[in-house]
Image (cartoon, rainbow, N blue to C red; front, side, top):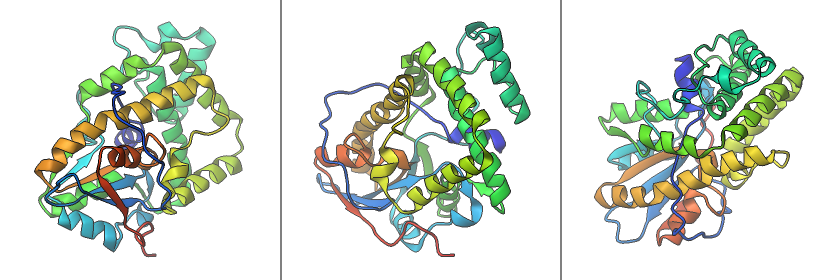
Length: 301
């Protein structure tokens, strides 16, 4: 379960399709959006997820559950319960130890061993940078929560109760392509800077960051979630452009075909929804109507 939650926190992938127009960034604060127009027989739904959080805070709201009840299938970024194939996270023949200096490898190895995460040698540096973020977040959540879970698994559980199909909009091949687009040096820089950042941070600073991320998410502020941190390095910006913008563009033609066949509930990481190259903007530029469904960001306590 630990590696499953970590894997979800990261994901990835794929090919740039530059012919898609860019629209206006959404201003409404909502995690749940109804998709209609373009001769759709029935509306579909777009929902922003968070890859890990306190179990007691991730229950679906009545509005979210109602949207699932109206849908015929669930599409997530990737199949979180099937990671037995190459997700693009491995470096192929190169070992991590071969692409890092001896002191760099020791730093990375010590960081992950302390957190009981093994098998780093064949993982891409860029992938491990996201794993590092997820592990630190989980450490905090384990101290603050009664239990931890992913919003994706909450959606899967809800779909299973209704005997709905759970599908992925990306494949392992997609993820391989997108990680190969990232420069090795960028991945190494991001991995080392991520580890340095958390080794030099005080626990109170990490707690503050996690709390701010959670509040931003549950406020439904998809525009803020899509923004890159101002202190990001050039390498990190290049990687995040691939992970967010390129993947958003990849999904739109696939969503178009999926929605034309069946009413669908799409659950994508919250950072993918907002911004000028976010899924909401790209769908609107493609001729769809996106309507925010308010009052359903935060579960009832």
